[in-house]
Length: 251
Image 1 (cartoon, rainbow, N blue to C red):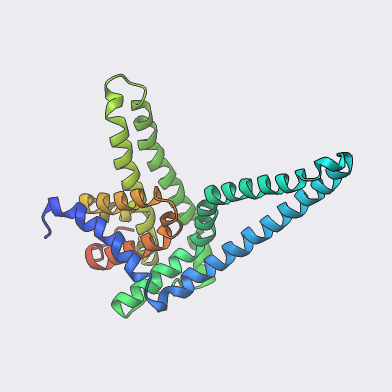
Image 2 (cartoon, rainbow, N blue to C red):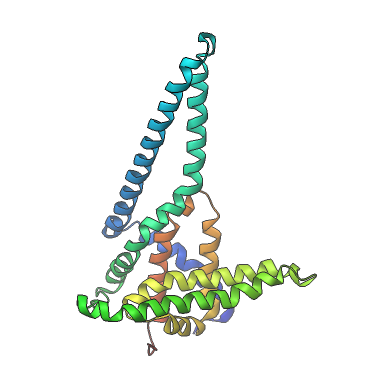
């Protein structure tokens, strides 16, 4: 077994491995389709905003004297700057929301690439409907688990002296939750629910913290955060295949 002190570095390395996996042409369809949808969504929103802004400018200009006609160019310049700022700060959020439904498929494709065999099939529609209550209950457990830790950790920021350690504790908690979030895709493909996922990760906590910490750092880097989600899914899938797959799942 890997020495504990090496596990955070190994976990960090799995995110780098995820980026390398994205270079495989077999995975490109799972990246290009969400990207195409994002471009269409933002293009449509930008076109609608420009159309409405143009109508406002056309309505405003006739009320101004001729020597102020140059204001139209200034207004359009301001519009483009504001639009660029909004796109910069919202693109990664909306891109991740749009890409989320593809993450399970991406994890399946990565596992097939690494092992030669895909996860077990999801089953029939009737089986999926029967599993819906359990899936909803599982999501509620995730929310309860998050609140169980987030609320007391948040209160630490209000306590003198203790609040000095609060940022570090919050970063560790965020790293742990990110590891669980992305491991959910490959583990969920095998029917492992939230309790089983936590059990697997608790077996090698430093490995999970290293992986989640790498994801957390990468999300803070502009432009890199645009592709962090698929890279994290790919890295989490490799982590599952190489380090967490052995053992008995608790359903």
